[in-house]
Amino acid sequence: MAGHSHLTRRGSTYYFRRRVPLALRRAFPFEAWIESLHTTDFEEAKRLVRARSVEIDNRITAALAEGNSTPSPPLRPDEAASLAKLWLKERLDADAEWRLTGGPDWHRNQGTVLLEKAAAARCQLAKGLWRCVGGDADEVLAKAGRFYGKEDPSRRLMAGQLLEAQVAYFDAVEARQQGAVVKAPDASPLPLSAPSGQPSGRTVDDLITAYTADKATAHGEGVVMKRYRHIFAALRELLGPQRVVSTLTRADGRAVRDFLATVPKHAGKKYPKLSLREAVAAGARDEAPKLVPKTVASYMQNLNAMMNWAAAEEWIERNPFSGLVGRAESQAERRGYTADELDRLFVSLIPLKGLTPWQFWLPALALYTGARLNELAQLRVEDVVEVEGTPCIRISPYTAEGLQSGDKRVKTAGSKRTVPLHADLVALGFVEFARGRGKGPARIFYELPEGPNGGYSHEASRWFGKHLGRTGVKRPGLVFHSFRHTFRDAARDGGVPDPVAEALGGWSSRKVSDQYGSRTRIKPFKSAVDALDYGGFSLLKVAGAHPA
Image 1 (tube, rainbow, N blue to C red):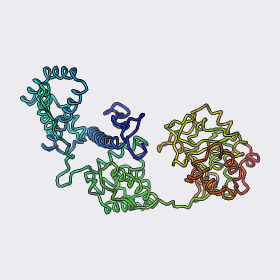
Image 2: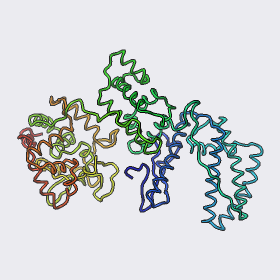
Image 3: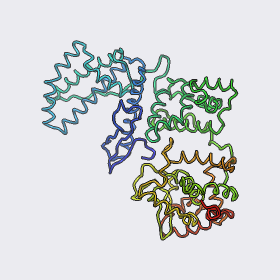
Image 4: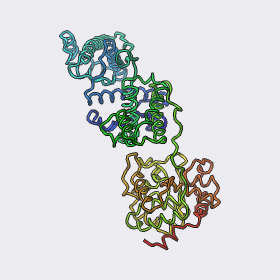
């Protein structure tokens, strides 16, 4: 649910849902944890999902450590006793619940268990046969986010505590079988041990691991690493992987920001075998250009999002890096295309209409709808609709049946809209083209693969940037997104009121866009589309003068 990671609802009941990171599918051979929280109360669900998220974070941490063969810090005796006490509490709480729900059947079941297992548990404790509960010890440790090798003393310590807890459990069950009142012990886990002289708590490495796993659920691990590789490296190299997150300060944030400003461009490609610090030194030696301020600001915004996540997950009380860097500004001012630039650009695109249709139709649609590139690249055949006789495209994350599509998205709630098609697009055959691409949920531009950031705009964006250069139209500030600026200028020059233009382009004009797309509003908006003024440019005229 929006604002609450891993919380979803089926009917009136809330569920915990979290994908298993691809790198851990061997450790967890299923796609996702999906578990009922057994509550219909939202506040209770939030509390339960936070607790379960912490447990899954710990399991992921332990699995990653096992995969890297990196043992956790040595387990202290008091930690082992605390974890065993928690194990005992969970077992006794479950027994008490099942006595109420199972009644005589559960009583008979527990009697059988006592006959079969209680004596063996006492024998194991007496002889110190800790390997008999080694698997249970690994499970308890994994829930706490810890991993140790098979012969590690910490694993033996944990197993020894479980031998005692196991006997205590059977003693308690035997007393309950006779009608005695036996309460489960009060127990809560202790935090993971930290290196000597360092405060205990979740570390930078823990944060990186948990955040990566969480965001990979929605975006994939490749996308997360692409966005955060330098940030993760800077945090580890400047602050230390075992630095406790709750001790981070604004001075640490400034240090990361200033360090990122010294990183050379394309450091991963130029210096693939060097650490980030070493890449900085090599870049200075080679007089390599550094990351531009916009890129540094973008990295810091991502770091800020990461720390906001830590605060939301209650790892820290507040984000210490908040406000250190403002919005990342473009190096060149964005602008729309002039009529002459449009003419030159579309003369080069018209021959592509029959060869690689998406290379013609995506710019044409962007020009006359003001839509974002991914909004167009993800269009399905069912998104080409007719409203009161007016051909339109439907920009929405939902299917025609009103269900979440799974692979379509919009930037904001105000971006969901139905846009009338300009007469030039209709005359050039877009409706017929779209309907010839398949039926219903088929994507119109199915040639475009899903990109590393999700969506289908990545390949189109790369191609368009190169094509601008080949046509000679390339200028600072001119990119595919410039079509949105062009659309806004054309609406203004055509006398279209700003609220109407904002609704058409998916900007945040709630007053109009809340109504937009209804049957009573489509004709006035069709009139607005017809009024668009591109300074004398007409795609239909260009196509007629330069046929494909």
